[in-house]
Amino acid sequence: MRAWRIREHGGPEVLRLEDLPVPDPGAGEVRVRVDAVGLNHLDLWVRRGVPTHAFPLPVTPGCEIAGRIDAAGRGVSRKADERVLLAPGIGCGGCIPCRRDREHLCASYGILGESRDGGCAEYVVVPERQLMAFPDNLGAEEAAALPLVLLTAWHMLVDRARVRPGDWVLIRAGASGVSTLAIQIAKLWGARVIATVTAESKAPAVAVLGADHVVSLAGRELRDEVRRLTRRRGVDIVMDHVGAPTLRDSMSCLDAGGRLVTCGATAGAEVAIDLRHVFFKNLSLLGSTMGGRGELEEALEHVREGRLRPVVDRVFPMEDLASAHRHLEDRRAVGKVVLRGFRS
Image 1 (cartoon, rainbow, N blue to C red):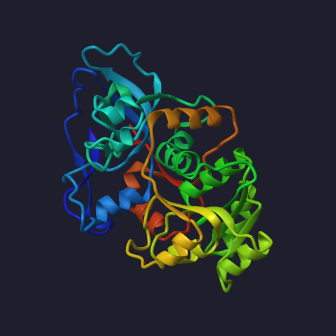
Image 2: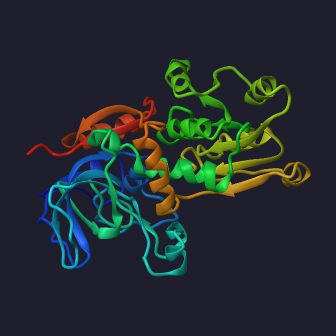
Image 3: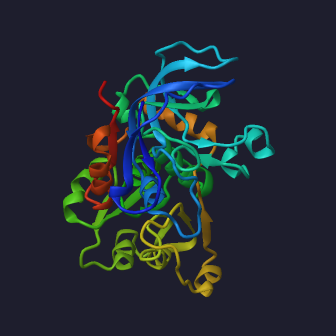
């Protein structure tokens, strides 16, 4: 089979298209023919490398996978050619967090395409428990735009920040994949949403998703704009996955008792904060990574009912993975960058 491999870290030029043996599923595993893969900043980090983390190179990237069952291992009774969506996170399946649907807290938790081979290939083998029912109201490319970002946004707002009807929610980088879903989730829960964009050209597409206010950061002080929109109150929740350049500014937008939830640091990880601001205003700083399988199933039910929808910016052929990486890195996208499976 054809598969993209990362053997050393670097720019898009380190992505190598190789011929590998078609993997055989073991006991309790299935082989999936890949129809589409969603790209994330995780793919960029795996390719570039992270100083504090060792990736198991060589690795095939790609964690958001839609496809069809091709073969089943011993003990698995699934229909061939059944359409499936794959849960991107994998725990051990037996520890206490895994048994409590908190596998993202499992000591051995990993993500497809990051800690084991992912979907940028013709086939991928996964444990049967990773299979999820395919949303029949979507095509493969739309479905592949969902698993990681939908789970991330749902866990951040619903589980960690406990969004409530009437809350004011500030969502940073509103045109990103995770934020386009977060806007919809916040509105689903009856919140009022302020979304930020770095370019005015992205504002109309973000507004269509349901944001009550879209703030272009060009030449504006965000705190002043938030205070104006909330009648000097501030927001109850800030969702920030940008990191160092935005975190302090995000905190300044919170009302007393507000919650800031972060799932990433795409633009920098180290930030200095004034703790007096945290404890005098009774603020909560919440970390969030992935979420439980049950949360993803709950969120996908809203997708099937049409209350949440993926936002796809552009679809690239799998053969042109390097161009897809460059498009994502250039931060021009509104929503997700998706790869269409290899042509036969």
